[in-house]
Image (cartoon, rainbow, N blue to C red; front, side):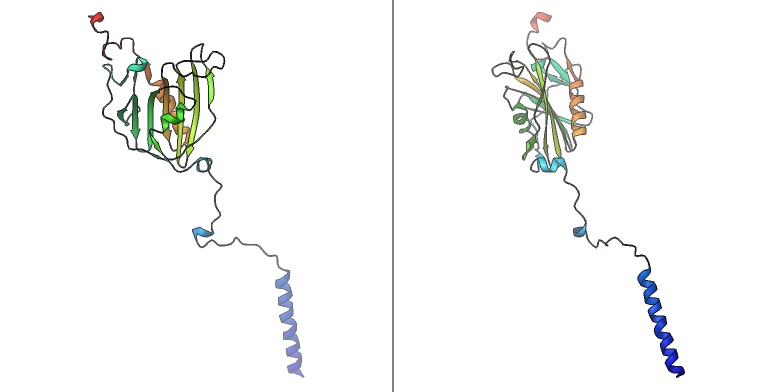
Length: 222
């Protein structure tokens, strides 16, 4: 009889523990991540969706012409340009290019087309770029300026195109006039590309007396 009572009490004790455990609050735990494959994917980057992977080309067109006052001589626009510190400068056709690692700045002269900026960047980039719609600013009766960005994985191209001739009705550049002048900068982020582009424009100065340096009109100056 005593044995039966003890077994009965033990049975009650077991049920009591089970009821208490069921009533206890349950705190959910985060699922453990054992490998990188289980990690949630980050939101897509704007540049990665914009185009294929693009890379900078290796460029070496020889030394660029140096002005007597220092900097790189740009005879087509009667100017001198001081590239960013630490960038290696080379000439490429009518362009002047400065590069450091995966960053590039260039000043390009080319005949006007609706996609001058894309054609200019093709000289420096291998791969596909997705371009934003250009934004144009009318400067005066004869000049207008267009800005836009091209994007690919890990690369942003910022361009600013100064039209040498302007259609008076539309304000757009027109074929057949003097070459457009393009400032172009390439970096891994839009902010950096924009900063390099702004610096390139700031560091492009008009030369008061460029004639002899560019190889003409010297006889009239002596």
